Length: 256
Image 1 (spheres, rainbow, N blue to C red):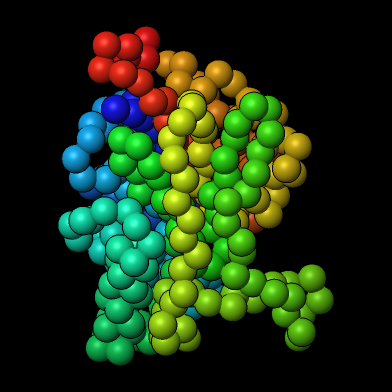
Image 2 (image 1 turned 45 degrees about the vertical axis):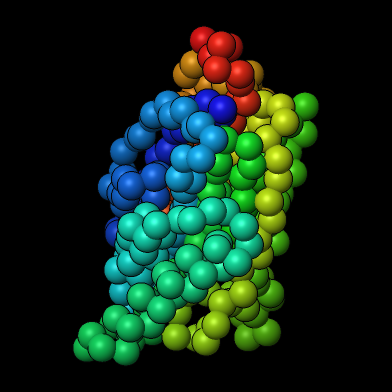
């Protein structure tokens, strides 16, 4: 089995007046500024635990609606596994839900969202993303990004970036990046919106995430410190952070 220690927080940031990010943690969905912390035990044969950050597309109508639609779709549909074809179908269903509202609801045409997340079983975890939200793995003192941002420089605005795909009417069929990894040793995962990675340097991320994996309170501390680091750099965008500690264990050896 695998023990999960999960902590999360979303914050509107220093500049925006609305939080268009949305957190998904199993069946729990929130876009309110506030903290979440839970422990879970995953046993063989149980349904996957799914955690994701959905970031409503800034500057588009209904960004907050889109991120909630994506999180609700991913959190409400049964997950028959975590293989790539399952993950791709789940992300595709979220995209379809957004496009349906974009097509049918007056004033919401053009809404969209990014997504980055993990689906975890007792022995493996799959990482998925569309857009520029990200997933990182922290192990043995190093931080490695497990996702590749779907964005490129904007040719019309110096220093700006544009998304190359998203969950929206602008991407007819999203092609999520999906990778699956075995759980063979304790590992910490960071899932976040670009509101964190755009303002907090990689070496700071590494320092703030370097605490003991699986120790009680460490995931919560990391989340608090990461949000504080973003706010300390003026956080011009919404900031969302999920830290997931995965600790494989025999039934007789639970994490203490």
